[in-house]
Image (tube, rainbow, N blue to C red; front, side, top):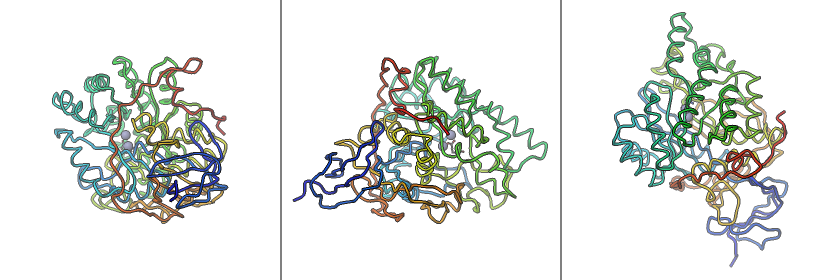
Length: 489
Ligand code: URP
Ligand code: ZN
Ligand code: ZN
């Protein structure tokens, strides 16, 4: 009788704190031992020359989220979590979205029906609050928060989703009372509406004008306002999908004042620019997302924000719409003015390989910082740590074994989502997940999805624990930031 169901032998094991050479012993789906020369397991994986990291936690991704017709997301829980697993992500946190006029409980029930029996990896839910009525604020949200849905996203833009400042204050006050984590999509809706009208009046409706309708100042203003509202209420806030250096500066400024403001950024702001929206014909629609990608100089600023600790979280913001599809980027089957193009791009499978290759591989990020940004910090911030997001005795055996030398050219046929394109087509990467394990079970090996449909379990999130300031470091934010980092390239 073996002590371990599985031993991963001789790998370089990386956590947010350390990088050490050791074996990983797995028993009953959990990590049971970390040591040199563990006894033989029932199953063995030779990880010599490989890097072992915690399975990624993708804390911002969309799948099978109800959309106004004719739009429909291309990925349901099955295809999105299959794709996640093949890219090294073992926990996803998509969004149960309330429609205006709808009970948020009903939205959660509906989303559970969509996920039940369909996931390959474990999942939790964020909520999206679009209609903070008395009932929602006094009854539904407190009950949901206490039942394991401890984070929610609010929008400052999109007509069908946005809240005004007073509503945001109501929701932030509720987050403070209940200890929940508020995530904010920060773009100024009136500025975008006004600019969109001006552009349309001038006949500028091609996809590339999407970027012109949402310039950096629009994001900067809303980011500053979100920070101010959270300061007023004295509650932590996380600004999602930060695209621009100016918004990032607002976050850095808030953190330097000791405010509990967290920042998230995404691959599209490191690897795409607004030129991708200007591709020939209508193809630029493939890269329409909000906020839009910026320019090369801005990409460097975002790299610097990742390395220097302004950002705590690196998510995909996977928002899957097919390009050549009337339910996707061509609503109704035709090229439409940019304001009607569904926002969002796919990236759940490419998130980790892109950051591993271009961040760790090119010396922009320490390996521990990579782990912190992609797994440990999101698990901590959203109340899943230490079960998820680390390699420690007692944690779920969610692990990725990387071949750091494997060269891969990204092409859509390599990926496992149900989208008909990847914005990263043709990019050459070094390093790719060789094996992904979820609770000790192989869910992808050699690029082939494994595991049974529906094996993924729903995770209740704990209330986020307020980070304790540590003396001598930059207050609370250092407690969950990368331990150290090199200068960005
Ligand atoms: O364009 C984006 N990011 N679409 C997804 C929805 C959102 O706002 O995150
Ligand atoms: Zn958003
Ligand atoms: Zn999103």
